[in-house]
Image 1 (cartoon, rainbow, N blue to C red):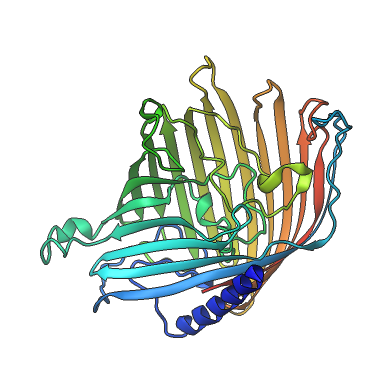
Image 2 (image 1 turned 30 degrees about the horizontal axis):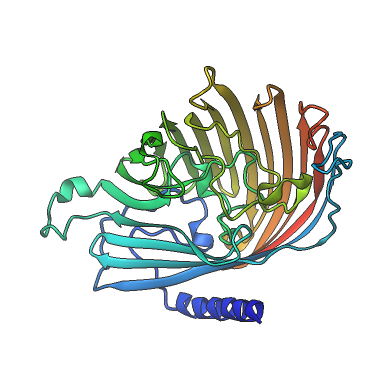
Length: 424
């Protein structure tokens, strides 16, 4: 009975959201949640104001996949009861339908609030808030015209929010929000975390700079204060379209850093409680198909992202180098991640696309082994409307370097994924 009520509520929510979308409820300095938001990164900065009182935009997303994957392993391991370990048998069927609820509110001229709630997600049976923040693009609430020349180029974000480390997180799937992602799965090392902090942006003539600080915690608590620290992040880059309006050739290049010298536990690669899209592969639980290096208490990570788009052809790359350790250890462990995506969009309003991605991760496992994980993805998609996307993906992921007692020794999974996504 509870499940019936839950899914009836989700359906009602989707229908209500589609009705709201017809009213064109987009706000100032806002990244649309539908097809128009593709290849946007940071929310746009616009000095033109449409504020005429408090306005609430209700939006969200609903997504489901059909999974047909196989997996295998040549590892030899034993279960806790002494029985011979085997990968769980998986077949072809539907995954859990996921849903988001988004509330975006224009509170004042140049002041906006965002709140995202996961209504249905892989890791939690109940709805829970993913993140929320306030975005300030003007200081009119101090007095009219206060620091106007500076605020025409500055944005301030404060809250428990998705930290802006790298550009890959702008293209990833966020639970049910899958419209921006041309593939079904995210990167193997999925740099994504929500922490309490603040970010300050300066944008001028195509250049963007950002500095921020957080408390380094996914789960907020005042206990164990000696383990607490500050996490610092920064980004520097250039985008010739977001600020100049260039149409034919889009060029963007950014470099980012995330550093913390002391936290109770670093979640940079393990904060996504919505879980992986590849369900139950390799027997790894809700993060199956991903890799978390679990550095522990100290971490420094760098990411460089080039993005090129000419007509319908686009390339997005990721080069990432991260290292860290526990306070009790004397030496850092390091990992390198490389990813390249090539996408061709075509048709009226680029409603169709074909895409390929190669993703590899190499580094020092906590066991002392040097491991490699390699993934190939090929996908195709169709935007039936700007709010509805259907996509199909072939994925092949292979594991190398794990010792024979690991289920990932000689491991591999591959097959087809079909996904239908609604976002408004």
